[in-house]
Length: 173
Image 1 (cartoon, rainbow, N blue to C red):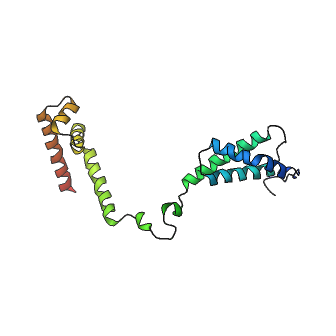
Image 2: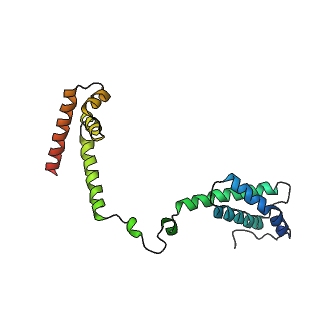
Image 3: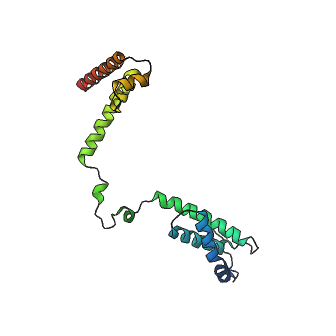
């Protein structure tokens, strides 16, 4: 048994389409920022839903149709954003996959970067913060000013301790 019950057509569907289709397209275009193909598909789906549901033919029919079409446009747009097409990526002919498969070097770099972040995370907070500022490009005087509580000597001492811990961690690994 079908999930949707069959509703008889009323015979005025072609007239409704001729009367409202162009206006419906404009309304959906104005309400939803999405490609033209999605707008057209949303309107087509709204017409199909109208045929299936056969709502009352009152003066609110266009408002109902517009609401259905806009909701369909949002739904289709969400689906469109989730799915990446090979044509959009320039790989329709099968070439270009190399851009999506990382080379061995980048995998090794990623593993090394994660290991370095773990080592950095294991440092005491003051050493980690001081070393992070140095790596970010700040000079000793700038680090001293940013930390507020540190002298030039304190900055240097924290960096020496951090580097020693990192060397010890590398030796242990």
